[in-house]
Image (cartoon, rainbow, N blue to C red; front, side, top):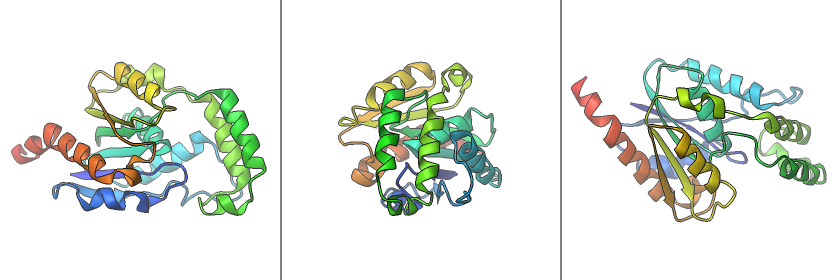
Length: 216
């Protein structure tokens, strides 16, 4: 079975390398970059990025698990809510499902305006695109669709990730077929604690999918 990894903001596809090293041998990993198809002159919004990721996922022609961290987790969740029948399970780490504090977004964007442009080039986007993207996150609201989600879902969060732990618990309460795993660490768990992260993935696969694949 395939497992598709989506990185967080500030990460690229290689952020999952240490997680992938210890995956169950029956899981075929593929890690995507978020901004690889975004032109520098394009106004970047969450909806645009969602469409770009959806196009990348459309080329996959077999069942898969979507695993994302932070922004990658939001994109994984929104992609599953699109109704793609090949998405069979979700693993969401440090995920939000509705707009974070709007004042914090404004303060963050103010900080971005004073940062050197070269800081954003490493992410594959421009400073202007980053500011526009964060502004678009003010309208994020996946809550009304969460009751439509009907697949096994693992929600992961670090004990020190104070900004996302309440949202993770709320997301667990909203998704009926979900389980929550709170592990020691901060926000970038795929890089901070890859062994613990992979253990959760392997257990998730064994619980929900390994027997099904043997039967089929």
